[in-house]
Image (cartoon, rainbow, N blue to C red; front, side):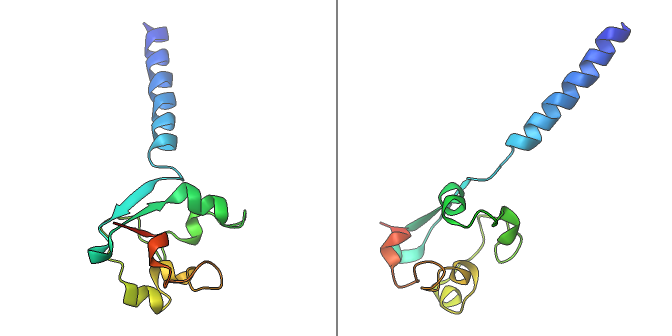
Length: 105
């Protein structure tokens, strides 16, 4: 009986760790409506692959991006250097004028 209880506790612990590690790790895709310009699909894996190796998820979360896909992102904010515009300024990454790179109709 004791062995079964120990096994059950260990199994719950191991499965719990696996659940945490697989919950929503790097590389998650998030889709935004994108207004009349067409939807925008943010692919964390692509962004992580292009960013310098020292950049981790914490560089963007929780600021300038809260981890909620309902977050409102406007072109005006981006052009003011907020949200995507923090990097997509034409220097660090392509600028906001290249609409078709993100907006897909």
